Image (cartoon, rainbow, N blue to C red; front, side, top):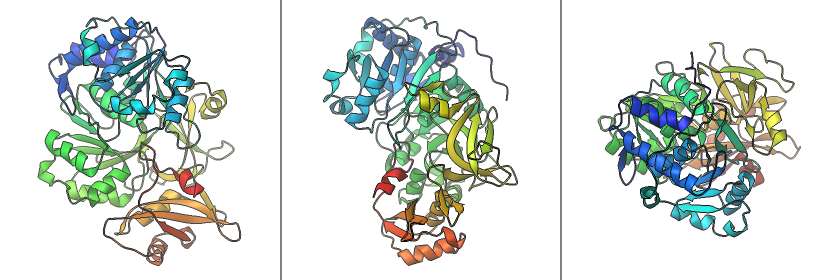
Length: 504
């Protein structure tokens, strides 16, 4: 796919917001949230006003501002207003601890914090000891926007300038500040939103994944703004009930979720009738989508779920199933514009059908990890970026997920994918979800151990589930131990935190 040639002097906010005005969409609805809506014209004015407010506080080009906000129209206003002014926004996970927030503010040297009132208590214990933080801006933004000018010329940034940061989810160790450039959001929209999903201005977009991480940022900001679609935002936690409410009332055509949520939706008695929905396509990322979930969802709705994989480092999905070409149990084929290769521990390309670590080459890779040269050098290998994911490519060219490089188990000298065992367990009618880790037996040999969450009101025994897995997989792959738990520990993106299970 041929990407548009962006000019050297390029500002992402001017492109994403201003492009809709130039296309004649000034009066079209851009965003709908829990308390109202705004047009593209109103969005543009609010973005200008917020950028002017930051400048009035003395912030300058490439200063940082941390955004810790629940999803509402104020979120894109703050994010894009900073970018338009040449200031670098940092999107923060709203589910973190005070320790995490203090680390991120100190590490980034952010001079301003934009925060939802309900989150302020997480910051108050340490605000007085931050050396660089000068301003705390509380939402809603309306009172301060009224006092700022609605006219703001876009900062003279280039397409390769730092644009925004995303801190990694922190599933292991301290979060890493991932620095993305001005061109990256537009390129992800061209390659995936337009190239794979066929997203256009007639679409209504709803993402259960929040704006603060890479997946949600594309779904609810860069994708719809690039094509002029309308976006539905939801501040509350995505539950089957809250998602169904928006699906029925707002009638989105595109929905973005994670496997855990799709499983919970299918298990819910409140699942809407097919005629209540306007969906044309759904997307899943964050974890491998178990085949039975995709198949059951399609049977229930007539709509495909496209399983894909992206990363904070690559900004959005680079490997995905396609509309009309969905092969459940695989993550599909490379998104046009990206190149992939699978390598062994020495960096050599593996043979067809063998597991290897996935490396990605594409135009949306981050520049680096802030203040982390060692990790930057081990992840960003020239034009290639290490994913940390194990994959194999089948005979038809589809990529099959094999788990994280640090989650893979070697049982009897053979690699075992936790994702494969988890998918087998999740196919049992009583199982809602499962996570598999390695545990040493009495001979200090690693074997699979499973943590299983049962569906409400359902029962199953350890022996029953072990026999079920043995009937579907090679015998050495079955979990030697099964522990029933009420829920699994996850990051905000829906990824299972297996390191926490290993600590038990």
